[in-house]
Image (cartoon, rainbow over all chains, first blue to last red; front, top):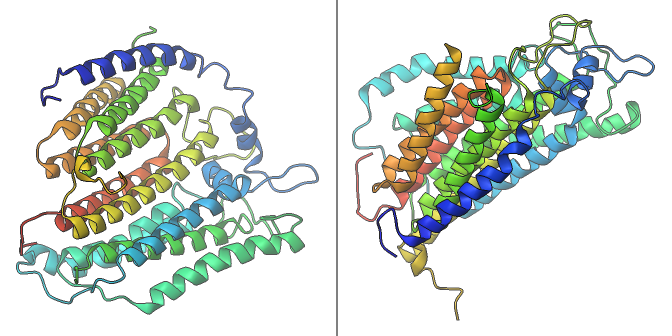
Length: 239
Length: 119
Length: 83
């Protein structure tokens, strides 16, 4: 097989793909017209209302958070399990290597001096995005990855972040509390992930029942897991 | 305006990215380039969800008044895109750790030299 | 104005997808792939999906770029001692 662009394998692929392209495309033409009787429109209608006799409302203005945590909460539980599995597997695969404390030969001057000014902003903005996930765009995943940027900045400036045992403990606690809060809904709320805390007023910080609590646990878990992934990738190999 | 309309350009662009990523995953020899091509294909699939959500002339789904809930985009595909992005990058990270460990044992990244499963 | 900007981003993303796959050095591929991530963030923000744009910005540029660059560092044959 030659290395030029127009060898026979590429020509066959281009012809087959262009044919697939022409066949798949007309299926999406009517995506905009049948918008009024979808499940998403009904979810938008009941998301900001409180729970009445026959309305299963969530009471928060951010509709995407209501869908992710409350109406499709089992998918989020599965996603958090996949992240936990990947972080554990990366830790196991790199477990034999040492995280040496040898400094880099040329740490960047600007990063070394500026990291003390920038690090608190990472943590504060990340926590703000996690806690206000039900009022403004954001939530657990976004804020968690941003708060884990602290470890990235420390690694870029040449310091080796030691494996802190408290991070593993915090990750386990956050994951278990998520499942326990959802399980308590079986007794107190009527179903798994049922509401049993009072829904406050609309657009207030303490509103939405168990939704902000679950998202805070998800945010802590995601932040600690991604920090451990960053640390594991910086380990040096030992034979 | 059926050619330069958003409802046909957006799916066409996403399917083009998906097919480019698939072509790269089949014809490349370096293992890291295969992972990059698969990640490009996943980005194309995430963009394809937007074509279903309906975005022209509507607002972002943050509700201001609890009694007026029309004119927003569909929040259900947004939730599916969130899950897809996170799981895609997690699986890519796991694949790359396996690649790094394989390189430490064998010293090569060329897939035509990985013959351990052949008899 | 917004529609012209969207088309420019789309064309740039397709070109950089081609260059990411056919580049000779591996580090060029990683940079073109990061540009695809940034272009996807802009597209999500212009199509009025703010939650998704935040997630793609945090994950698609921070996490994936670092993982690829660390793997490149571990799988280079020469013994390099600089960062």
